[in-house]
Length: 512
Image (cartoon, rainbow, N blue to C red; front, side, top):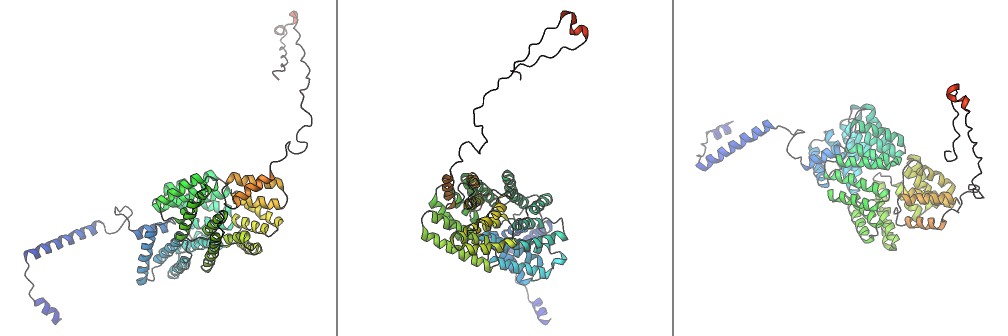
């Protein structure tokens, strides 16, 4: 108290002209800031100020949409700093978990998954599922689907739906989970509800996915074009264009696919999946050097096992065996990394083992996968592994499951054709090889040429069709009887007089 009194008695320094100007400026600044706070106390939806990087990323991950890499980095740093001092903020933990999950998608680094799981569990500890922590629950479902644990993804999605049936964020999780489990009718119902509740980017992307799986190609393209139209940011636009490129590629149009992939890269130059798609299209167009370059760049940005397999097979088709072996080894290392982070890579690993390793091991791996997930992708992979292991009769049952659901895949048709060839069914082999070539003759740099060779070796069916389908003697026009001439009526008995209608003339041969 004495010290305060002493300070209050200390004479203030004289205010010079410069000092008075400084005080006036400071006072004006305070008034302006106070006025600004009164006019605009908080950010609202119609705020004219552009959102910052972390706000943009938070908005994107909250909507289940792609976010830019720089924005994601800002959001992660912002939430981590905040949570260091506010560990009980369950909403921020959910946002951080969603940001980690989006980082995993962008970078194909499964090391983000355990971090996302930890953040989402912290959110559920602070605000349990029973009390309606929907953001964390849907985050857990999306995380499970990203790890290809579709049974767990389904459980989380259905839990959210049970507590809040009109909450739209449950339905993207359910569409992905049902698709991974092979429940395509369930996926379609969930997609229709999503379109009803929240038409927009997430809904149109899922609609395109469902239509593709049913074999409705035109509908899939239209839905993805709607998604591109609904995109509000460059990363969202890039994702929609990438998916349009994938649809073009699957229907055997590498030129159009290349155009879409390049559009995606113009919108988001860091989009690694679009870079891998461009590599695939360039290889189909015979631009092998550029394709190898793009594959290497894509793997540097997002080391995915499937991209490693595609590059290895391209190099093998070019006779570059040593380089191919390096990327097959990379595939093994990437799947091992994913396995430690809870990711199920059994389909891509099983196909690799069937073609380049131990088919019996592939059968065991994929049989276990089939017990968990009965999707067409698993059915196709298991059928192919059984064929490579010499069990064509069993293989055909799974090949039928893969090809008769509706999805049009050149790879699936080729696998079924080779299985039928092993069973000696030449007609079915020819039919499915032709189907593979019609669907996408560029589907694989290794198996595409093999499909063409197999089709050429089978040749065309013998002329004349099946026995007794065509007549054994030439057709001869029959000698038909001539029509009788119509007699002229008597003058005394005219139809008009008698009231009887006149008979109609018989039609001439030409009329008949």
